[in-house]
Length: 529
Image (cartoon, rainbow, N blue to C red):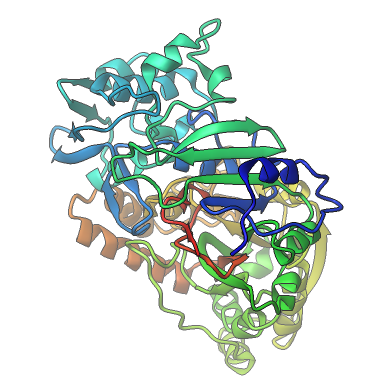
């Protein structure tokens, strides 16, 4: 394999990407990634809430517990080597790992953990709600999170399962910062927020060398990482907005990985030097019926709808590579998922269900959809399938903001949308799909149940909250599987697909990990032949 010197690589990356020159292959030990990174608003873990910023935070910081690169489905110790749960006292005590250091060389201490978690709550920026749901407030967090002598005790105020609390502490805002470094850069009481949005102070597998908004992220290996240094020496993520430019750069060997290619581009890849990897994602795509529309309130309509979706037809064509058939609200690949797919495209069965229930057809329904691929194509497939049973969709395309605004107002009839968890605990989605104790218009809730005006049965509401507080992890997972089966069978929400993400890369790249959310993108195990 031919290699560039570091100086030549730097000059190559400075070339205009809209007209790339013919270059040799990328240097040994450097992974060069082309990606659209203009979504980043913040890289401070207390503020970062965008997809790409989640990836950056994960590679620069650690949490007490985390889903790590070796197996993104297993909650493992991060900066904590072990922990003790006292469910009755609603406390978890963590013992910190010996020898863990920040990029500065400072040891990770209990004071750093206490400062980091309290800092998120006191700054109260966008992702703070993930931690404040534990009953933490700016006024009480210093009593709820305490530590000394290598141990940190976390208290929570709520009838929560310890598993739920641990998953909360594995989320992005629970990343631990080097308190000494951050305090040195505090300005006007901002707790280092401005500085951390341009720099980093973590203990993660990589150290931030340079971040230029909408241009570049450059990270180098943390040689003192507690799990050992990354296999790759450095990662350069270059902002390349155009998918066509990403493809050209990859085909010319100027980059190692293209992160934002379209399905058509993926399908056209025919180079022996390029491979495409597919990674299941946490977002689920669904069709839902607003229960404020009288013609959509009969459960027979919901049941028939499940047999009018051409799941396999779409999965093999218009969403090929982007989605896989999945019919439950929690994504496959994480504890508590329900992976049965009992429904297939069967218009005759759907017509029989409607006939047996005395539902009069035809029914005309407006269907709101985001006006972009693949959503408009999916809507047309649904339109054709439902028409076979006398349910006629009038497709109303709109911008994402227009569609979501109607959804939040409950002014739609039918809606084609997707949903992803805020953090990787099944309650994050169960609350959205299986819980709605107050269906009144004035009780706004950011859930699919309330937005579709579905008054969830009392027993399902009770089971959702019981699962939240169940202390036995295995029993808790089974409760969530039961909830998913019930929503799958008895709700006006028809879950159809789980998203997938495709990445094209040089065939010599191995070890790249892309989990179900942006928080689970890892470069630590990457190697290049």
